[in-house]
Image (cartoon, rainbow, N blue to C red; front, side, top):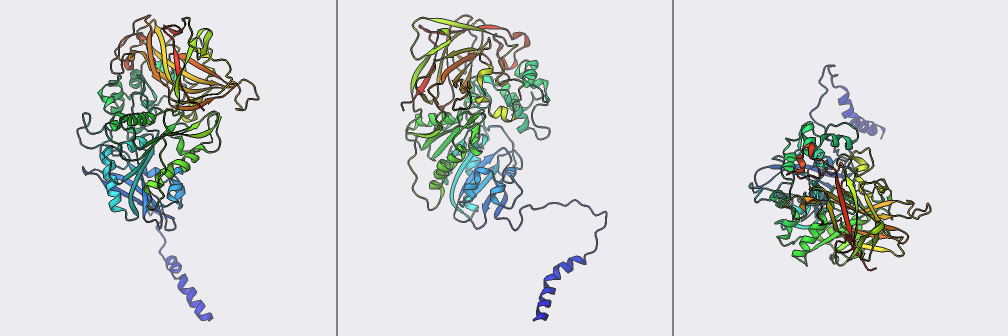
Length: 628
């Protein structure tokens, strides 16, 4: 027995012995090696990298990840400009939950195949990159777009993944939400469900680049970071106050020239198209989808305080429902920032919620929505409501059979800076001087449009602006009963300017009780429920800018973002009116220039802005009041 044991031990030690007799390395042996596969044999997953061919021969870099042993699996796809390789290697781990984004864990742990793909022209994908590549048509004569690339990708997946069950869903946020929506145009038959989150839909009306005609300067940093192969990133202005750097540059185009980014194609396109012309209209995804019958069940969603793409999701829902009332689409709104559903949702800035609201929505709505449509042996899908939204103020999820779920009720501006649900009989006005040399900051200074300061700016306490001489603040009395709004508050501002152009900003604010014992723990807090800007030159239409007649009263109309919010008893409702949100939005010179993007320095002048209330010119915020 001992001899057998020694023989076995000798055999086991043989590989080590063989290694030990290798000749020593020369001290000058090159220490560089060609590659190392960080996915080791002990990994609990398979991670495949594929150069996937499209119909024009261009190959797109695609990463496929699934747990070992997976079979008959639904496929969940995301098409991204933000690096598919990085998205599938969050941590260099041998556990599948660790290498993928947090939101993917419930899916891959339940037998899903997860697929990420670099859009054409970025990272490891071949081809040319066009930011928000237009659909084939007047702006794109190539016949290739995100719709065709999604179709070809899905076709490859169902034909080349034996572990799959032939059913594909598409999901993603922001740009990935945009590519998810584009996949719905002439969709592949295997595409069974879509979950576009915070999608970029209309870059001029209310998403990334402009809001109602006012340019959002953070687009410069985004363009420089995404479209430049070497040296990209934010504009190299240092770490100082961006209020100062943008003010010193003058116009938006002046800023671009000052930092050498004015020749970037993406930046040039913005500068060359300041109005809502064909360039923007042909790219509006809500318009594109409304022209086609929606056949793929879709859950479109966003955060109530989405600082980047607050317009797109509700716009798609509205456009599709208007064209196709029975369309298989529902709207989700949570108490989050941009893309907040994919992170922890316990709080946003100073606001605290009941539990992890993002996880709640992912598990109670997103996953069941996909499971019943993608799994091979799934239970029948539950009926789709119109909307699932989180009521901020009372902190609870609510389901509605229609959206908006409130009935419009006007809240009128009144004398003595009051707000009233009764229209003032007597007419009057209030005025302020807007000085482009001293624009109202959108958050307290110093300003850096990055990090938490950027992510949370829409829930910033608005007391920093209240009381400024160039900000008008109107308020109700203390509320005796709750006011619950569910929809998009609509602005009807009757105003005049002494200049030939003007921006107007309206903020709808929940003013918390001032007592230190307030249940919110935020005594006196002024919470922005909705904040939005309107560029006056577009009062006659977004595609037809025109100078304003000095002193003439105009009816400026626009909407605030969609919300579900409860103004609680003991709180007050406030409306602030001002003419700048700087430097997030570029300054209006308040004189007439063909393009504000390139206004000369001498064009910027003070103007007196007059806001009318009561009588025939009664300014109001129309609240979508729900009957609880």
